[in-house]
Image (tube, rainbow, N blue to C red; front, side, top):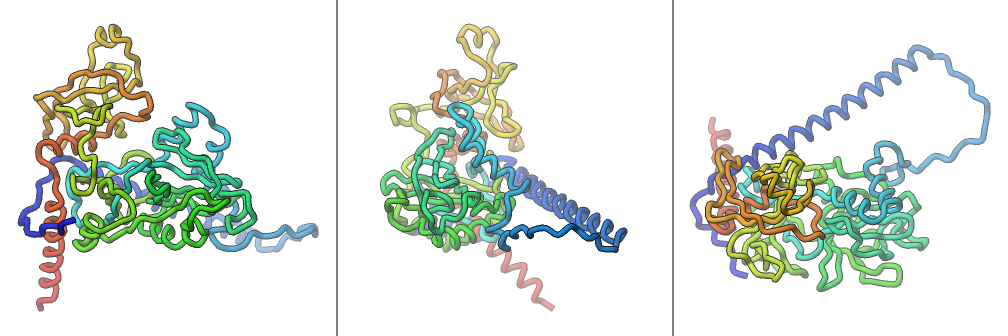
Length: 426
């Protein structure tokens, strides 16, 4: 693949409110961390106060001492702070059919599509080549491993070398030592490429930064033998993707470097981002024709339609919206048309964007020229996100190119150099 052209002299102007929502997401994370720290301080202060009020020791009847758990995060007992991860394990055991599919469909962290280039891309972000394949959760618990697709349906049920992933007495650990990984299954080499780690040996990582999660992912996964070739108690190989700092060298390595799998664009992760379910602007996906076979969405026949198609969800009041929280309203269907067509609320519908296109004002959608096509594929779990619709629209008219990303990185580095020069002047 040809090297990236770094001569482009300008930065692309922002066309959405994606950066504003990214700042809000980071502020929300910081506030949640402060709330948790304050709760811990209050609890510690209360315990010390109670101890000071009654300094005399209380003699307890002698009894057999209970064995204490080993120290360290990997051996902490399961408690309420793990409830979020326990839900995943319990859901694997208890939920069946459509209930299981609906629940698991809402557990993945879904990157937004890159509409605008984030500032400080070279300092605050990682980049890595996204494997082509099926996005899924992999849960290992109680001697078995299950992978579920983005729509919640089961992909594989198999033994693995992950913690508690097979019924063997090996390094997989005790029954409570479960594991949750965010993966992409690459069909060609039958490999699960791990793009994130949500829980490891019962220790939750969703409230840790991406920087810490990726560090643990690279250091812990190989220890279990999960990256080894398949065997009797390990049906599929697991592998980590090459994660780079998003400077110019890292971007070029992700974009043009060789990897053992087919690429489907690039993934960008903010280093400070926690693992949050649903759509998030702290993780982004970007692609062009050189790093992905599928840049524009195709129809059921695998052909790119002449007009862009979008999938939206029908609401009780007739509005059709995206999967975002809060959802973006693209239009409203007439109640008579809804009744005549036999449509129901919460149904996913397919529309074509006509020649009138989309009208964006101050980063907000003002108008969409929608034409009803029909119901969406029943296998889909969600409507399109707003960022996907806008990325697909700009890809047809004014795409965000790799040269724009390089220009943004160079501009940030030049600005940093200028700042350092000013600070050094006496």
